[in-house]
Amino acid sequence: MTGPSQPMAILDRTLQILTEGELRLRGFLANASNHTLLCQVGPAEDGMHAVYKPSSGEQPLWDFPTGTLCRREVAAYVVSRALGWDLVPATVLRDGPLGPGSVQLFIAHDPRLHYFVLVQDERFHPELARMALFDLLTNNTDRKGSHVLLDQDADRLYGIDHGVTFHPQPKLRTVIWELGGTPLQGEWRRDLKRLAEQLVREEDPLVQELCSLLSPREVAVTATRARALSRTRALPDVEEEQRPYPWPPL
Image (cartoon, rainbow, N blue to C red; front, side, top):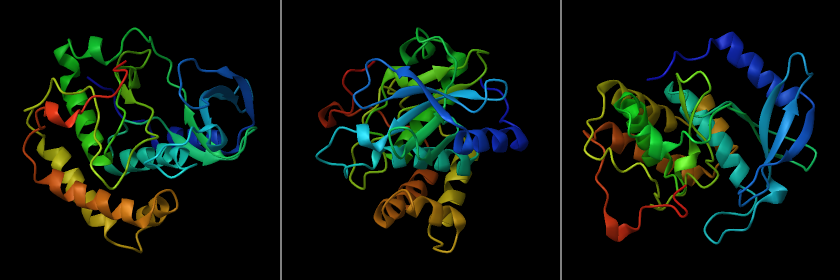
């Protein structure tokens, strides 16, 4: 149950404002492990709210290079857009009041309508299944229930918080396991096949963009995952011994 993709002109304008508009800090978002700030971007009459995650506010992790989480946020958006899935809100990398970081369009939503509520409504199952597939592709290490949003018009699901993604080693942790066994639509598999073919062409602008955000190895492994998933018929079931759940789950 999702609405149509944004018209290109609207998306381009959104990206322009996120990239060029003045960032005015409005406050910290609670319960975030890294610095996560709500901002007003651009003029009041033509601006928008956005979530700013400066690299200077990232807590060090033993398995991810320091200062790269904001780049992974942007890479997730780039891959989502390349697939034509539009699961991730528009996100850019830019300088801000606290230094370089990711700036992502804020999606107005009701925080009470998180994954554990949405999954009870079968209308959302196709899009949740596609989000689970996206997590497999990006090797999402932290898909909590609160990272799945239903926009205020109740016609589109978004996934947020992709700072710990694209690791070359398997690290999947997600709450979206109820849909294990769901058949993967042929269109999704064709999208993944196209992406896999695109990611092995070094001269492709998409590869160059992703290599400015991720390591070449991470891009290459993403291509391998896309190829494998394009041949997969259904979402996998949970394997408890792998500890595939994030903590906390919400």
